[in-house]
Image (cartoon, rainbow, N blue to C red; front, top):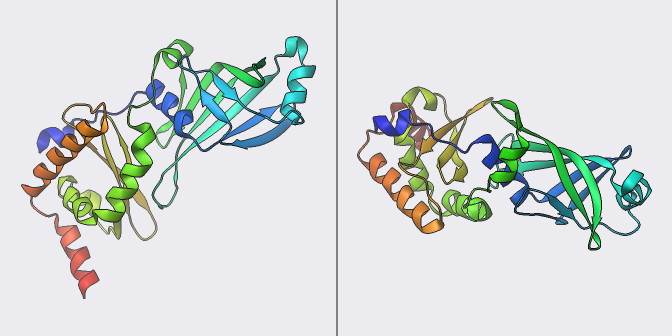
Length: 241
């Protein structure tokens, strides 16, 4: 269990930045002094450019046609929202600054600056890194996997808390799965007025759902051999009483 606690493998900033727009529900666009939000209107190309479908009468389309060389500067904002109901559901935000150009009836956005903000802080991602990176292979399935784990297997979530250091569970009122990627599972530890996140890394990355299932079973087997943390025992006893 010591190796699991000490190894903190996680997605790099470029991979994380590519994953956010790949599964984001919406895209907020600021251009020419206006801000518009588009839901279900964007796709991302293999090289990280964003193709946005907008109405012909939108302010953004007009700004594109009227801009010099029909390439208005703009900022795109994407939010990574946790699929399970928790406090502070925004897990990350991504800002892309760059240029729009008409493209086959849509608008194609070429980023020139990439900024990723996570709870640990903001980081500027190099364009070459962003272009070369790929979204997490589990990103498209994450929402389904996490909600199934939270709703159908709360016993498994409780068992996984045996891999969490007891001090991290102090005063915990609820533990829920917050995120999963090819590198590991993140649990949200909620308290009455605060919360914290704990990461359980996999022993090796998972490139598909089949491999993820094997990695989760490995974590659960480790948890079964661990001692139940005392804070969780008190929490359960209080709830029963």
